[in-house]
Length: 376
Image: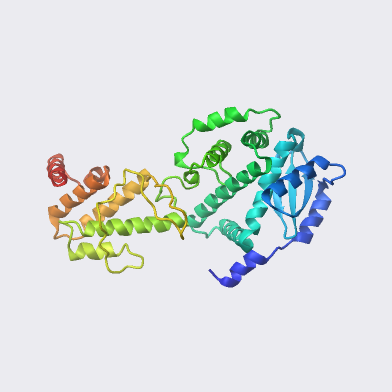
């Protein structure tokens, strides 16, 4: 990254005066004399989060949906309420909402504003039609992760899971009376292993699930990442997919029946940059089981990831491409590739190879039987 661009994104707090004037012109300032409960909730949340910062509160005009948002400023925190939210929250719920918004400020100010710089960079990239899909998916996952971080701030502020979920439900539904325990039961009925489909926020039920599981010391990373999907990787998954491809190609090229110079040359092309082919040790990785993935930059070891059908199909095509790369390898290469597919749990491989190579039923049966014998 360009260091000057990074410093500009991290250090600059633009538009403070313009924002303040716009707020004074177009919203209602909630001063402490007239609205002491709001300020008390804000102070309680700030103290719980360890933030010693001036907080200003404003109410937007109009009767829109209930909402609250942080308007980030260098020297103070500004929380803007929208719709009839304040009418529906008790003091603890309001503390949770303030904690959520102030947690955003906590994230933007730690590590000398590094997370704020990343947020600005991804926001700018998402607004550009030329941005590659991997950056767009990275922006989506980043937004989901920051919201889960802020939800933890809401809990930290009020100190109670039910209160935090109740505040979330009131904000999302507009209802004055909700049942957080019922919502947590609803969350437990969902299959969240496929990840959140949200764009800027995880679904409400997913947020409640993530908060409860975080409090129980359970891993919730899968809600953000989902399965490893070749059709929708973020920047980190793109690196992981290249590594998986490189390792799998190397294993294929070292398999008896596929160990030719031509196959090795093709397999070496999966290295980044292309280079000498490594020889991985151990058994072939099984792709029908959760895949152990490498941690990033010394982070804790992530939970193994399942693979989508599209990713398994991609790996099948990789295997078939190498199996047919050397015209002189013939049937021994095909048989070896079918054996590799069986050991790797790539069950769609025979169908895919049949579709691409046009086997008749007799030839397919003969090849399959021979491959089964190789696997033993």
